[in-house]
Amino acid sequence: MNVDHRVIALIDMDCFYVQVEQRLQPEFLGKPCGVAQYYTWKGGGLIAVNYEARDFGVKRGMRGEQAKELCPDFHVFHVQEVNGKANLTRYRDASADVFRVLNANYKLVEKASIDEAYVDLTEDIQRLKESQLKLTIDDFPSTHLAGFTTKTNDERIEIVNKWLKDCELDDEKRNYDLVLGAYLVEKLRKKVKEETGFFCSAGIARNKILAKLCCGFNKPRKQTILTHSDIDHVFDNTPVQKIQGLGGKAGDRVMELFKVDNMGQLRKYSLDALQASLGESNGCWLYNLVRGIETTPVSSRNLYKSISASKNFPGKTSLDTTEKVRSWCQNLAEEVFNRLEKDRAENKRRAKLLTVTCTSATNETIARSCPINEYSIDRFANDAYRILKQFNKSPSTSNIYSPAITNLGIGAGKFLDSVNSRSIADLFSKQTNKSEQIISTENTINWQEEDEDEDNEQEETITEKPPSPPVISPVKGDFFRKFQKNDEQMKTPAKIETKPSSSSSITSFFSRYTTNENSCNSIPEQSDDRYITCTKCNKPILAWDMPEHEDFHYARELQKEENKNTFQPATIIKPTKPMKRKNEKQQNDNHTLDAFINKKSKNQ
Ligand code: TTP
Image 1: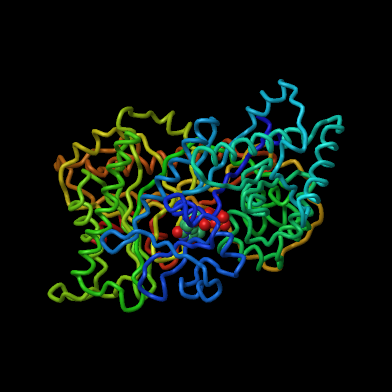
Image 2: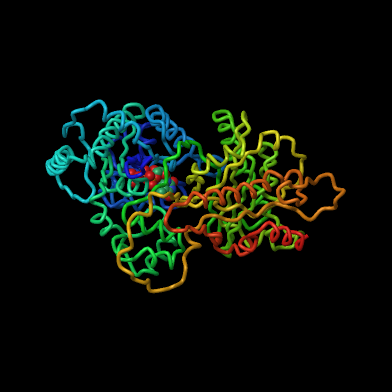
């Protein structure tokens, strides 16, 4: 399909958690409200604020008491707590209600977060075109055009009406499918409201990044179209950091390297100049994006790629004894277990990798994983604790845990379909189905992202594993680059040859591919029958590590396959450097299987 003709919508629920609470307590509808975690300090931290309250200056991140000072009628809902930890079940269930509606109406729906979904409308628009539908402004009661600020509804109607007429008169009908897209999204949002009670907003554009960007232009309860001809104007006013993928350090570095604040300022850089600093593929990606071209497809994936629970322990609450660490391993394990069981029942799949993440008071972050042999709270908790024990610098005779833990997370991922095994061909065909997952993080206003690969192991591989202490491997990073590319991308010739101010490369900030660290324990004796020789690399691998080890090969093959499919005419060199996680030097040393094995054996 020609990506220039795609129409993608990003549907984003308005102040979602607040709406979920108001659905349960309708007497608060229309009143200024927010959702806070914890009653403990100054009314709890607000994680969601509705628009009525925002009018009073109440913002996410404020304390409930502070909000009440700004808005005396402000009502605070509190997130339920179980075992001293936030329980997000009601929001997850509400999210499932929304996705049921989206999935019932569209084939290509991708869950972007708990309250956001991408919907590819392209096919439906083609069908609609055949029906010769006559549309009027009345079919677009909440539609706006990006790049136009309207103060009143009359102004909005005037602008949208004129645009509709222009689209009709345009012989090439370049924007007509965006018109139809907006019409479909008006209907879809109405359906979501009717069937769930929730209001949402939407962005409609030619690609996911633009749809996401313009969705935020007119919230709540509205939708915004971003046409190709308005991109330059919009980008001239779009801070680099507002673009998905450039939000964090990557965006900072782009701004620093090219001395720019907004996207439009990047237009003056030639392809060569961008590639010289960002690497070939990232340079291409940015060069095209600045011109409104981005080709990541919407993948019909509605399930989270991992199920995680984490909690912050700031200041004095940090986990500084082994009892506290153990007890929180148990609590988090229980939450993960309960959600995994629910997920198994609903989605007929099983997770096979447990990941423990922890940040210490000295600001070091570690992430380690081990296989899941069975779903069991105690097993998860014990495995997590065993991992964490290794990072405790206090003598084993002491009950002090040092350095104390300020954030602890347990997650389960790498799901296997319980019913079917999959072949490597399936694996390859799924390579575009990567997207962000949510780690439920409470007490912090902070989403984490992780993007793990899929694999092709059968369920039996897990269940037949002998019970064993966890084989700890540094957690596998993002297997795949965030941005898919294809040959549609390289169309525009470079304009002005302008070199950025610094020649340092930021390739690693973009490259999300981490060469696998596989989980070999040691170089074994040949006679040891716990080991299997890998047919791909002839290395002896512990039987229960085989799934992880095979992923290493799959990832490599995927990498090669992806390299073959990258777009022309630029030769895309896949970044081979993994993204360097803060304070994870050790992980970055393990770029090859050999290096990993050597390191492991050195450590034995
Ligand atoms: P958002 O979609 O970011 O925000 P929102 O739905 O509250 O408001 P908006 O209308 O501006 O989109 O997040 C969805 C829900 O996720 C939000 O209601 C609360 C929760 N959340 C957190 O718990 N922590 C966070 O850091 C963020 C951003 C959201």
